[in-house]
Amino acid sequence: MKKILICLRQEDLLTTLELILKHWGYRVIATHRPEDLPQYFTDGNPDFLLVESRLAAHPEIGRLVDAGCRRTGCPVVLIGPPGDCRPDTSGIRLDVPVDIFKLFCIVQQHLEPLPRNNFRIAVRVPGMVMRAETTSLVEILSISVRGIFIKTSLAVSRGEEFRLVLPLLGMKRELELTARVIYIVEPCPENRYQQGIGLEFRDLDAEATAQLEAFLEQRLLKELEEKHGHIEIDLTNIRQHTCQNGQPDPGRPFSA
Image (cartoon, rainbow, N blue to C red; front, side, top):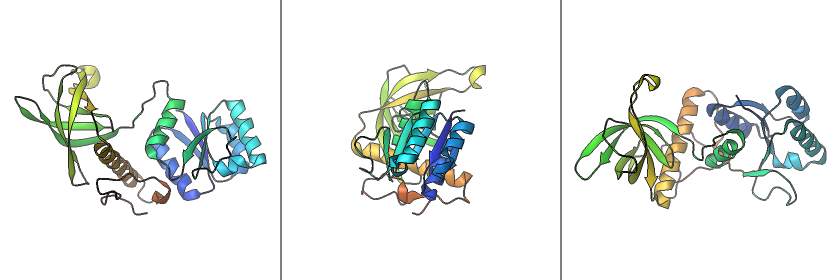
């Protein structure tokens, strides 16, 4: 399991990022004390470092970060308000409020041999496939901003396109999108006889993309609430994606 070291003095944001990264399957070492970094580098041997940009700009702490990263070979992501880093500061930038989708891409690109560009959320919601001849109900098992996996026994061909109705539960909305078949899963003992289709969304406009992002963000935060309901999530420092009216989704499970 890949290990991520986070050092932020803002403890609410530190806890929120720790929960999100653990939810994505990473081991996380979190601290608000920069003086502990040398020990964590030695004992934890992290694969990835997220550090507050203002801490990294401090000469003494910057030397600790540079030394630890040279020894372990781990990349550095600097977290802070836009424009908070000096132009000559090295490292990957991640602005606060944090965009969850950008965080996922950065982590994937630096830690995974086959990185994903979009995180997926497991769901069990009904959907509808509309073809020229028929309309069929299906079960949606996972979704990202670029595509879905549906459980169905429909006979389809790779590359086939059709219309798909996707309900955004909790948002009182549904999307009607064009989707293309990119892979087909045939039932067998290895996959416990699961049968389904991987679909890629086609020609998404900006509004549909925004609604999908808001839906995925809401589902992720709901999963965190269900798993860690006793811990307050810091939404003030998470970039909240918006829906058609330009406002944060009213069905969000947390209040800022």
